[in-house]
Image 1 (spheres, helix red, strand yellow):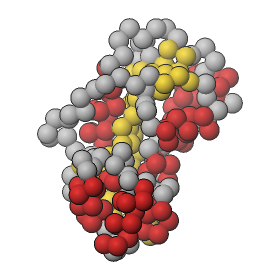
Image 2 (cartoon, helix red, strand yellow; image 1 turned 180 degrees about the vertical axis):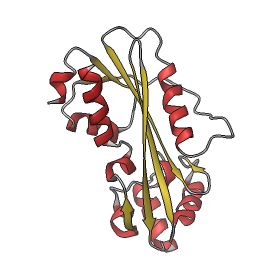
Image 3 (tube, helix red, strand yellow; image 1 turned 90 degrees about the horizontal axis):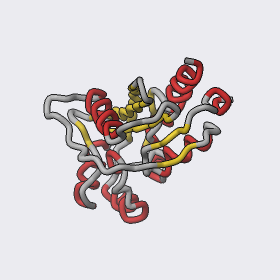
Length: 194
């Protein structure tokens, strides 16, 4: 359905994330991927969604001279708990992050930026996630088995830690995986009809 509204666009997904690519396939979209290196440093004063909005727009800025029929989609996800928790530097950092998230609530925030020749639109979504108290043994098992070092907050909700550790979520599940699919669909429909 979405494909027919966007048939005149060449969609470029600027993400190396296998999960985001999977979502775009499941939304039944034809797209190409083009990931450009960006220094993902953000100004110190930014908080919450302002960080992911900034970073998704920064990634979009790497694409100059977008043609009339190109649509570039960039995205960024952070875990927020008393400050931004990004991807871990190493195993020790990942363990520190999971201990911080254990037995508490945090937010997962994802922004998506849609850029065309003469427009740019940024959306974001926030999901609240509650973890049970994770034992050291559970954290070690997860880190050694799944090595979640490419994930914001050091975990994937769709992996073992999500099965055994998450007590509840409030908001979009897919947002925690890296893409607020219903908002992306809604925005793409609006862009396709313009």
